[in-house]
Image (cartoon, rainbow, N blue to C red; front, side, top):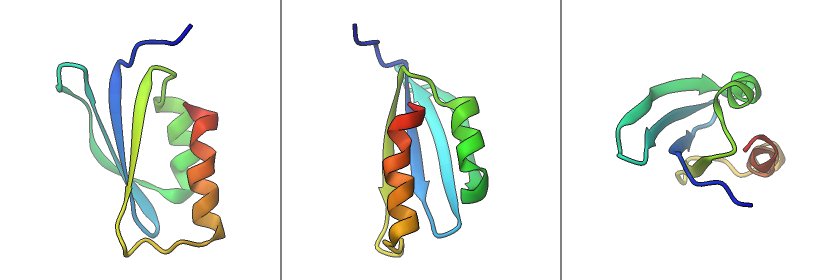
Amino acid sequence: MSQTIQRFVALDIHTSYVVVGAVDTRQEVVLHPRRVSLIRLDGWAKKHLKPTDAVVLEATSTFTICSSRWRLVWWWPIHI
């Protein structure tokens, strides 16, 4: 059975950190924007992400695509 989405979590990926934030289904802020270093991202995700979250990733052209960054992208389904 699929679960209903409760929050929309945005992740803006930068070279050494991610800006995270979230709104609920009424578009009310439930997680104020904040920086999370890539080193601490795993712990942050385990603490804050829920199975009912919809997550969107954003990365600009300044985001360098390399093997470590690809691991970050493939890592998300494990925590959601």
